View 1 (spheres, helix red, strand yellow):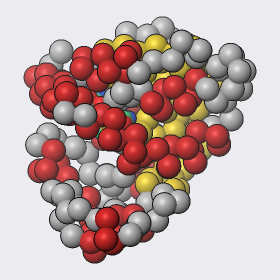
View 2: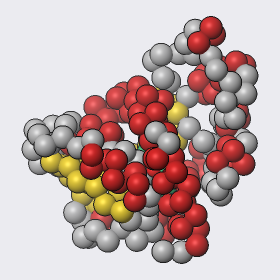
View 3: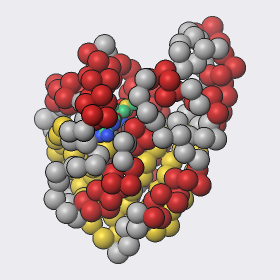
Length: 232
Ligand SMILES: C[S@@+](CC[C@H](N)C(=O)[O-])C[C@H]1O[C@@H](n2cnc3c(N)ncnc32)[C@H](O)[C@@H]1O
């Protein structure tokens, strides 16, 4: 692994150990539950979840259709350990420690590549998208969801808060990166968390959301869903 990868693994190992892995399911669960049913996962399809954390979205992908399977990869061994502890025996899913840039998975093994709030950590985005392209079958789809993007202005300071380099790209940048990597039909759209902003009385300031106005602006911008297709 490279130095940036070692740093990412340490950062996210400590998130896993402090319970922050599980808290991400609470934060991102609503948006992912809106996106996954729209991915047209059919019986027997195979999905890859990039930056799977504790694997909750990997398990949702595997449950999206009878006989579907999913693999979650993550750079942080402690996240993968937690994913295995939380695993359900009744679904076809597994979890591997691997960086986006070197997945160690077979060519054309997947019908879907999915990722929630992870791809912008890639130290080498070009290589990461080339890997996603390689492991997808012809006609397979890529669906990346991010909250950290240039049009979501309240997130601008997140790289300082997390303490690791993060790619702060615009919607147009993401479409261009997908197209350059060989994907067709690159498009972006917003997904709004159906819970809205919640009750101001329950709001607790944090380094990412220091005040209620920042939180509301973040929720109103929504998550960015980036989609593309490997040519058939
Ligand atoms: C913000 S968390 C999101 C986790 C999960 N998708 C979720 O929504 O709960 C980002 C995850 O991406 C992983 N990650 C970051 N950079 C990575 C890389 N270059 N290769 C593989 N995984 C990476 C981290 O270890 C972390 O678990």
